[in-house]
Length: 255
Ligand code: 9D3
Image (cartoon, rainbow, N blue to C red; front, side):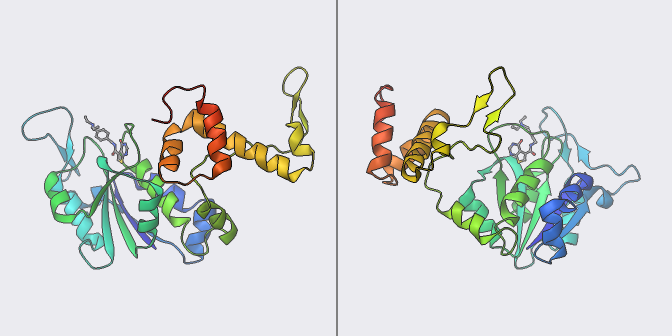
C-alpha cells in the first residue's frame, strides 16, 4: 500500500512513518509513503495557500490551485489511486470502511487546514470524504494518521496473524478487564488485589466471569452495541441471560 499525504504540515505525518511498527513496515516494503507539501505549489512569492470564502462567513479556505497542482503531482485521477479528503462533513470511519481501504493500491489523503477546501476541488478530484468521529479537530492531519494507522495494520505481514484472528472473532462485546503482576499492587493503603477468580486456575469459572465483565462493560459504555447484537442475533443464550439480568434494573432497555 502506498500512502500519499497532501498537507501544509508534513512534519506531523513524517513522524508517524519513521516510528516503531510503521517504520518497520516501510523498511520491509509493505508500506510506501510520500508527503507533499501543498505550500510548495503556492503561486505567489508569499506562498499564499488560503483566502476568504465567497458569500461571507468566518475563517479562511484553502485555495484551489495549489491543492490541485499538488493533487496532479500525486497522480490523482490515475487508476488504482483513491483520493480521500479528511473532513468533518465526511462519512464516519469504522472498521468495515477501514478494511475496504486496506485493499487499495494507493490512497491519496488530503489534510485540510483553516475552514476547509474549495468545493470544486472536491467535485473534481475527491472519491471519498471521511470523518474520524463526531468531535471537532483543528485540522485534518491527525485524522489522516488515524485512517493510516487503522488501515496499514491490516496489511499482510504488519502484525501477527494471531492478533488479527482474535480481532475477527470480535463478537460485539467490549473487552474484559485484564491484570498482570504484582498480585497486590501497593498504590494505596492496603493495596489492590487481582480478582481472586483469576488466580484460581478454574478455567470455566474464569471464562464465565470474563464474559459477565464484558457484558457489564458494554452495557455501561456502549449500550448501542448490545442493542445491535440483540437485533442481529449475535448473542447466544448465555450472553442474553446476562443482559436480561442487567437490564432487569433498566426499564425500557429491550425496546
Ligand atoms: C465552522 C464549522 N466547522 C465544521 C464542523 C468548521 C471546521 C471544523 C474543524 C472546519 C475544519 C475543521 C478541522 N477538522 C478536520 O479537518 C477534520 C475532522 C474533524 O474535525 N472531526 C472529525 N473528523 C475530521 S476529518 C478532518
